Amino acid sequence: MRKYFGTDGIRGRANGIITPDLALRVGQAAGLMFQQRGDYRHRVVIGKDTRLSGYMIESALQAGFTSVGMDVLLLGPIPTPAVAMLTRSMRCDLGVMISASHNPYEDNGIKLFGPDGFKLSDDMELQIEALIDSDLTRRLSGSATLGRAKRIESVQARYIEFAKRTLPRQIDLEGMRVVIDCANGAGYKVAPEALWELGAEVMSIGVEPNGFNINHDVGSTAPDALIQKVRELRADVGIALDGDADRVLIVDEKGHKVDGDQLMAVVARSWKDDGRLSQPGIVATIMSNLGLERFLSGMGLGLVRTAVGDRYVLEHMRAHGFNLGGEQSGHIIMSDYTTTGDGLIAALQLLAVVKSLGKPVSEVCHCFEPLPQVLKNVRYKAGKPLQDASVIKAIEAGRETLGEAGRLVIRPSGTEPVIRVMGEGDNEDVVNRVVDDVVAAVTQAASKVAA
Image (cartoon, rainbow, N blue to C red; front, top):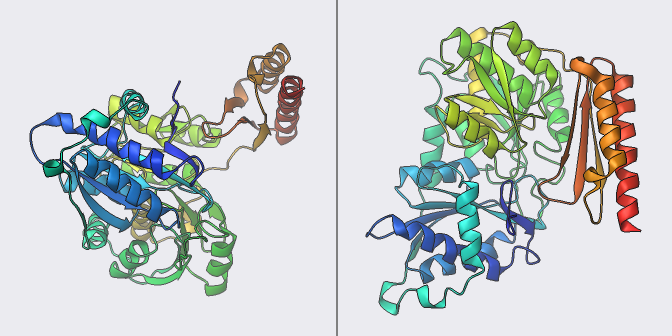
């Protein structure tokens, strides 16, 4: 059992769960772990999104790292994938991103990357947790060996160049009208600039962060503003990032949403045709639509499913040699370029396909008709409702009803006391009935524990 780390770093209410004391101890613990790699001056890069609490957590982490003798390079507001890239590029021992991704501004989080730019393994996170809860007093640096800290100004330009170079040389975005929604988050400077430098006509929204408005009615989890702007300006495409710019949602020229499943389908088809897929298939999670699986199968490609979380997708990709994977939510991992989900690079790869085909986004991105998919959440206060006999029986009955032509996925959230019930199949009425039956059973089991 892990005390601090969830499916994507440490996350919670700023100054409630994510306190300066916790951030300081994370810095000390992680710094001590990664100083065991050799006898040289160790250093860490720290990036953040645009939340007000980022200042507080950044300072606390800086104090933690320097107190154990680690030098700190402060990047300021920059996307999570940029932190991963710069950790490798700048030969750092560790990378830290301060962000709660798509959560509201009241929350914040700490994501850690190793020297290779990949998120830490479960085992390494457990080792850091043990250090966080131990007495580190005797392991702090002496006065002469404390770390130093400095702010790096050139990192945004470095990341923009890195993102642009993922496009084929013959491809630019000349003649494309693009609306980019940066969620008032970490990508608010780099994403519009990269698109403009590639030749696009760029209209930006969600680029006025004030510490409080990150993800508020903008971004990939709230695309209505982008949809309206695309239709209003008759743009060719809309791009919505989330708060830390590691996920993306696309809006076509008609104002229709394109999720991560359709995005993966587009890129998989293109890369297969170009001989660029390293394996005959892609990796996604248990939440990806069955329509994607059928579409890939029709091209002779497979779909490997993992637990929810881009880290689990990436772990399977690394272990088995896949170079394309992701989540329905828009975390798209292209391991030829990146070590984590990258919303901007995923968008650029899609635009490269659109540009090369010379077709509208609506045609390129409608690869398959998604099966009806219903997701409902049940909040509970205590206990383990999924172990209740009535819940187990309802789940078994639901799976039997859906049969091989459908799927039923029930899982506890990794970040909050919620049971997520997802069903999909060819008949929407049947799917709704199955999901409602399971939700009713879980709700009743949860109420028994609460009583």
